[in-house]
Length: 149
Image 1 (tube, rainbow, N blue to C red):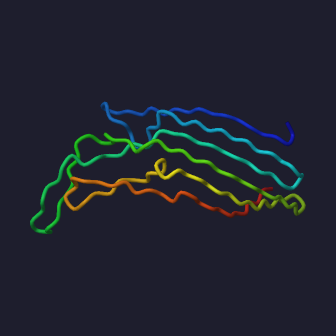
Image 2: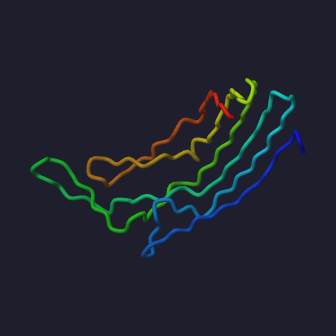
């Protein structure tokens, strides 16, 4: 209990207006965390997250603008589509150093996100009739320093 830490959470945010989703509607998100302090100055951790994709507004068509020689998207219902479900695995290692009342923690994290579960947003062709999904990087390394008093 002093060296191990774990929890699981479930959250839900159903936000609707006029039968449409809202920008941050997320009907479910599940998180699981496990952390182990294997030395007084070192700890490692693991987190898994699975969540519903965020809503976005899909163009319902487009109009040609002759003066700019470009198409303008037309929208009907806001936030009528949803990105695919998202999942992520984090690995974390941290080391603490004490300077009197101040604790400096240096850490390294590695985020692993499966490509099919990491859709950032859609992009559209010139007349908004076709789209492709922009996929985020599958691995994200992070290094950081945190000071606490």
